[in-house]
Length: 167
Image (cartoon, rainbow, N blue to C red; front, side, top):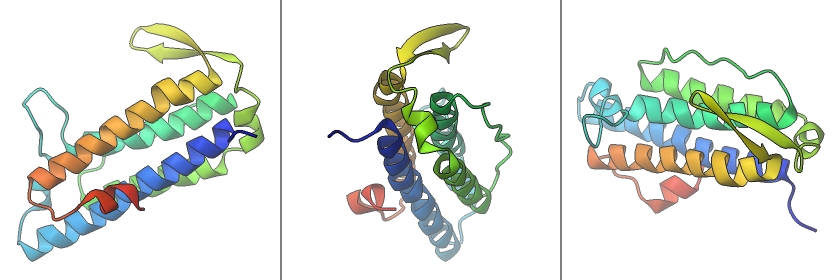
C-alpha cells in the first residue's frame, strides 16, 4: 500500500516548515548574540531581483496551506504578508502548520485522482490532486525552503543539513 496524498503533504509540511521555524529561532538568537538588527537577515537576497528571506518563508507557508485547501476542496486561507520580525515569521509557520494539520485527510485523499484547476499566474493548469502535490506543492515548498536556508547561511548563520532536515 502506498502513502496517501494527505500523509505526504502533512509529513512534508511538518518537517520542512518545522525546520524553517527552528532555523528562524536560531536566526533570532544569532542576531541577538552578534548585536545585529534582524532586518539585515530578513532582507537578505541572492540577487536584487530575487525575493528576500521574509518572502521565502511566507511563500513556503502559503504553498502548504493553500495546497491543503485546494486538495481538500476548501476555501483558500488568507495569511496577509505583514510579517516584519523573526517572531512574526515563526508565528506564520505555526499558523500554516496548524491549518494543514487541521484539514481532514479524507477530504484531501478524495481528490487524489480528481483534476483540479490550479491557478498559475493569469491562467490555470489542470492537474490531478496527486500530480499537484508531487509536481507543484512539494517542489515549491522545497525551493523556497532551500533558498531561505541558503540566504541565512550566506549571512553567517551557523546551520547545517540537519537543521534543514529536522524540525
